Length: 209
Picture: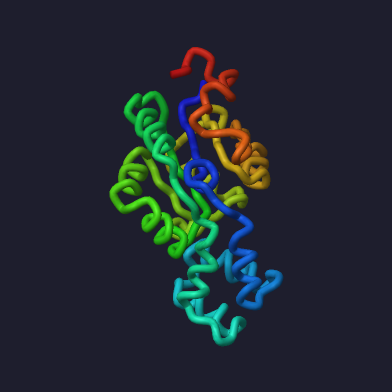
């Protein structure tokens, strides 16, 4: 029986344009991400380095580029949060049938952009739907590393067989699957979180709402 639903954020609730940052970064002179860049990105995503340090690093690579330009390029991935999805998670929270947890790889710049796009009032409505709201930058852990899933299991004393984890990145869901968590590797633009109890009805049986 599924008792806990763990959700990713991007391309589950909020729409993303994953190609946009690569396009915008190329305009600034970055045509590929080196191993060092990937390491810096992950350090930023886990809150090990600050936004200032992150932007300073890229300013040294993209000469004559401002921090504002870099921030805008980095944040170009963030799109809209449809109201129908917000109402869906609010209804699910109101039902109190499941423990709801958000588990997202993100960073301060992206969250600032999310709030700007959503408005603070809508962001807080969203955040208040969850029993726990975990952002990688705050807990210093990131998917697909198994320690982030074990952190959630240990913190909430959950049986992995009683969890459904929804994420659009296959690497993340496969990592969770290895420790016994039920998964839905959602396909953006083809599947929608609001169809959860239709598309995954085999997992819920009598628990459908």
